[in-house]
Image 1: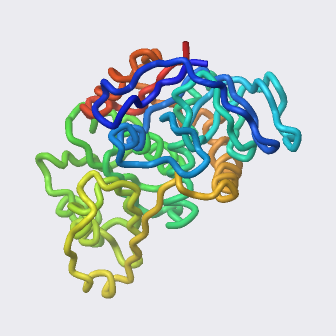
Image 2: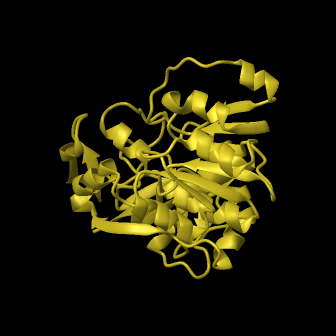
Length: 326
């Protein structure tokens, strides 16, 4: 099969389409012939040599995909050859075929094309497993999403709005803020021209928001703490602003705040299967009802993976970037 290979750690130019061996499936796995995969920030870190794949996972980039099942392991009962699916994978999405644990496979949501379904697994599992399963975001609360125009951001806006949450977002351009507003965000803040803490306080009568979904990390930590209401929850899913900082702990104690962080990739197979099951039960019906749409900015063929990475690292996109198999 063909796969996009990281020839050495470095810039986008190290991504090359090469002929490689087909993956072999285990008894509890399925083999998916991939139609499309979607880019995630972790792919660029992997390419630069800063994010090693967990033991046993594919060395090729790609944390989600959509396609058709070509083979099933002997212990797999739910899926059969020919099923059209999408999946959360530990790696290997940038390839024509990938072996996936059966518990990480999802049916394509009704009303969504097989190609566009590649845009859902990673964002749906990330958003549901963090601010809903752990932070218990609920109807009537307020949510601040940093990077509102990202793949995760555009998904979270739609899901939270549907579930009766008032959504605040930060983004770096008027075009991105307009896109967030169109998806349902109530308060859109340009972080380049506004102080998001002041705006959050202004919009909430001085209280702050109940939950924050943060991909920045260090440089935003104190400001995020300052933006939270009593019993507020901060969930960190990325470190674009660094991993070290100094904070004043007094606000945590005074307002009973919770700070948590987690990723998806390093979780166990059983834990991923639980998240995927919860997503299918709670999120897939919302997509099927047409309340969440795939936000796809641009599609590239596998052979242009380097160009796709350049676009992602430029931060000009809104939503997801897809790669299409040969």
